[in-house]
Length: 250
Image (cartoon, rainbow, N blue to C red; front, side):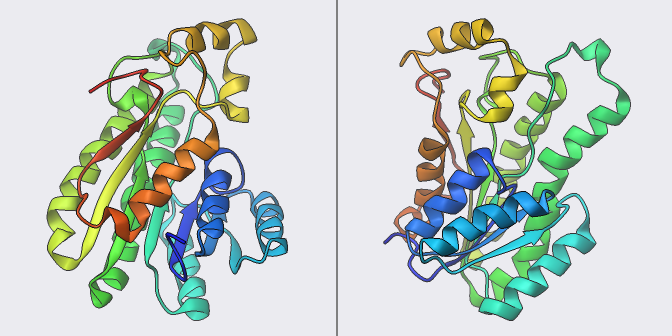
């Protein structure tokens, strides 16, 4: 098992890619703390993991608020005593709209959930990892942060590009402390949120433009995250792993 007995925190874990990551980590032997603003949703997902024999914890957490993050970390440390890996997955967008139609409050909210959350949780967990001189931080970016492959929204694209830049810089800072920091940039993935954002016809056109002629599946993104969180990726640092079916080739 790639993550046997590792303590892994996954944010935005109630559904979609986050839920798939939590499931994959548990399958690979990790002790999983699944966090989400949707407390009932993440509890239901963790209950299923426990039914499968996993050691898992569900926590309601607003990852845009430092006090919520601190409280979640306190609970994780009380239960397991350490954090081996942090997966900053929380974020996303709800509606595709032109830049001139984006309210300022929506811009701020998208930046907070997709980018500020990555900064806040990474900042909070770094002292814990530095004490043990071991850690893995995996941040979820996006194909739209890599190139103009598919139209979404400018605030989401900007936030995900920011995640990639933050990942690289933090990797420079903490590599000597035994901590690696990497990102996964999914292509268009068949989650409930993504499918709702477009008509079926629009989704079919997006899929037809991808060389493998289909959208990604959440489990395929999750497998890449598990690899970067494992000891097999110990010499990978500051990288962005593109998991997009050829949607963008960098």
